[in-house]
Length: 316
Image (cartoon, rainbow, N blue to C red; front, side):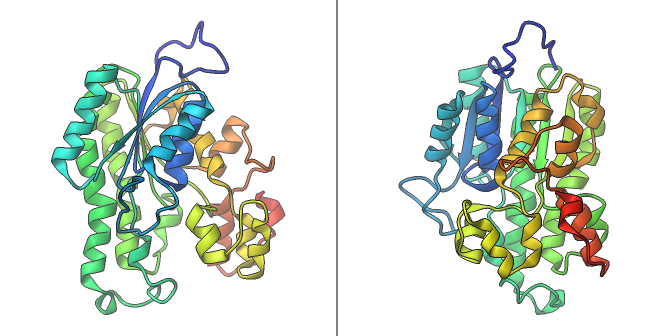
């Protein structure tokens, strides 16, 4: 990236522009807010607005609210309702960023919205031929096709100058994804961004840009808290009664801080093409979650999958 000399250490992204695709809620929203906290102008896109809900069916989080949170954190939030499966809409989004901001320094490709297509937990462990085909194909459209469309229209602006950073959000590290995720469509959707970054890392490096994939750990998203565990961020530990592994969970702020650390690192190219996690980067850069801990969920979950009984304290 450009030289950091002379930057306000509290607002190192003050002259930077980011686009966070799929920033309605969860990890993408947290990333948008943290980039705003660093002073960036952050365009946030997604399908759920104050006037219209997406197929996910949640009306409690909207793209306008995300933009307001970005501005409240110290940046400039710009909400652009966008369906990232609509090529014309994505083209219009990137043309607007180019017209208004004249540059794009950070692209976070975090579109998803496919959890409702899985019958938790019943679909996991079922053979592919017993899963609903239409739901599976829709999951791939949401998790793979939408990313490719976003990349096609946003990368020309991101690569127009050296220093651009692409962050592909996913669920799982490359190491963990060597294991089958027990749902073929989900496995494909979450493996694809890792492979995209492997290839794009090669293509972007020659232009002085960087591509990484980034995953949170066991994420305490809005839906996870209020729908699945019926807890809040304040009493989330009560959720361990339902799932003891919830003890390794992390707030969305951790992955937000991971993205901010990458965006403000003048040596970010050292990560080019790699699969990264919030826990891994917390240790590399020295930041913590909101409670001061550094949860590192994926090594912990690896031991769980392998049948061991890890101690959460060793990974937090």
